[in-house]
Each structure stands twice: as structure tokens, then as C-alpha cells.
Length: 406
Image 1 (cartoon, rainbow, N blue to C red):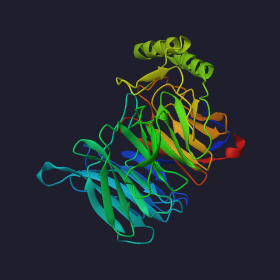
Image 2: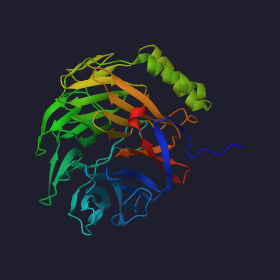
Image 3: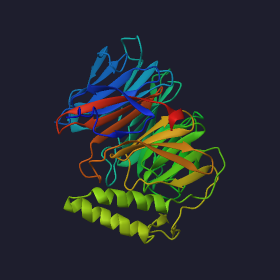
Image 4: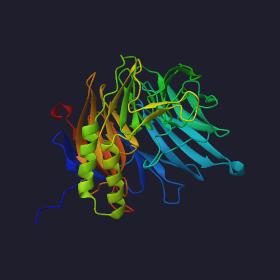
């Protein structure tokens, strides 16, 4: 009998398995550029858990940060050099009021640099997403932290100045829609991504003080974000990937045949009645060109069509992803890793085209129902895939990625 595979996935030659780590109750994992690892755990009750900080991915935790009483950790973020980390928690405070907390620490330092209570977080998912984008993002230089919040039922942004130990929270203007993700761009600016297409949706670059958007790309909607060289990747919604920043714009690049081939391949795997019906619908939907991009829905300004409109400073590309993606990670300056829960793909910006390679695939699954992949992280040439070995057991598989082999 042949030996059992170490992971239940097929792997591209560019991806080499380094180790499998048992990480019970893990909800997120974050690799740092210097090789350290943060693992966020959350108990089945929804409260409790901890963040374990490991000096190396395969080493025991050198520090464990318990969640606040009656609270839980949401996410953790590293600075570009791995020297600083920022963690975000939510908890139920006095009087049953839900609050947020941002903690910033430094490697080799016992006491946190900053620990501030902030407005409650604003996690949000859509349709087939398994979890929201991380609520906390540490700037590449480790000087600022951005937290997605809710104030009086309106989305808000909290920006923490680490040196001053102070936070500024600003609710978004009335009408701003569905703030799903945020990330610091390679240009040092803060970007947000919404799932709504319109004048108060899409992707936005914020002023240095976080007071207001200084530029917006109305059609560049998404529900995940990742750092890019001159801006961000905005993606995860409807299979569309946007490269947003200071570069030139371009016409949207469709990928109907690739999407149709992917849907048909997944349909061939399907046996469960729900999967069969769902994938039959997708095959027909794509084949008949029924997809429409609608801007400013239900307003006098509404526009719609089969393709998004071109925008200066943004390029849009279609992909084979057929449902919403929760996970996106930057790889170098011009690439990103994206997962839809069945596969992990490497996307590379080639100017007027988007190169795509599948690095990992779960060939035993065919739909967003009962996916195994529940997290993704990448840094310093390493990739971590968090997946469910069983209903109660979580594994983090660490890989070395050789981009030159893709």
C-alpha cells in the first residue's frame, strides 16, 4: 500500500512541503518576513483562546497572549521587518457593551508598546466567505495601525499612532457601503475595499491622517485586500481581481473560457445533490453570459453592463474563482496568493495581463460547501495553509515557495 499523502492536496512543483503543525482551535495564522509565526486560537464557545508568538514556525511559542475576559482575538499583523506586531481583540465590557482592543508589541520586549480600547470591530462576510478579512493591519514601518470598526451602526476606521499611543476614530460618511477589508499599500497609504460598486464603494486610498478618502476607484469592489508595490490588490468578489494604485489603467480583461472550464471540471467531481445543482447553475450562468456588473444599484445614477468600466490607476482581470474568496496574501511586489477554500493560486501582474498558476488543489472537494482550507498566510518565501483535518482538528501546513518555478 502506498504511503498516505502528508496533505490532502495536489501540489505544484513550485510548492514544497516543509512541515505540518498541529494547531488546535486555530482561526488564523500569520507568518512574518523574518520567519516567526503568530497563531490565533479561538475556543468553540466563541470566547477565550490566545495568540501564540513563535520565534520560528516550527518552534514552541515564546509568548502566549490570552484573549481578554469575555473576549476573543480576531487577527494579528506584522511589520515589514517582523520586529513589531499588532493584534486585535473584541470583548464584552461593562454593561454588556461590545468593545475592541488594539495591542502593539515588539520582539524582545515584554510590555506592549500600545494597548488601547477602541470601538467594536466590524467583521463582515458575504455569501460563501468562511470568515471576514482581518480587522487589524499594521503599516509596513510599524508606526501605525488601522482597525475596521463600527460606531453607531456606521462603519468607521480607527488609526493608532504607535509613537503617541493615541487613536483617532472616524465614522465613514453617510452612505459608504460594506467596508470589507483594508490594507497598507506599498506606497505607504491606507486603502479600503468595499463590496459595493459606486461613488461610496469600490476601493479607496485614504489621506495620511486617515480623515477621508483622497482617491476612489468606484468599480474596484472586493471583499479581500493585499499589499501591492504601488497600492493594493482588491479582490475576492465575483472572481474579479483589481490592481489598484498609481499605475496606468486599462480595459477589463475577461476570462469566460477559463471560468467555464473551471466550473465544468468541478461539476465532473460533484456527487452530492446540492453540489450538482449549484455547479449546474454556474455552468449555465457562465455559458449564457448572464453576469452583469451593476454600479450604484437602485439609484438614479445606476449603470450596468457585462464588464466593469475602465478607470485610471486601476486594472481589472477576470479569474476562474467562482465564489467569494476570504484569503489574499501579497508575495513580493507584483504577486498575490488567493484561496477560494478549494485551491490556492498565485496571481502575477504582467501589466496588461494577469498570470495565474494553481499551487495547491483539494481534488476531493468541488464547491464552497464543507471546504477544508480555512486560512492562508505568506511571507519571506514561505506559505502557510490552515486547514481542517477534522471537525475538531486544525493543521497548519508550511511550504517553501519557489516563484521562479511557476
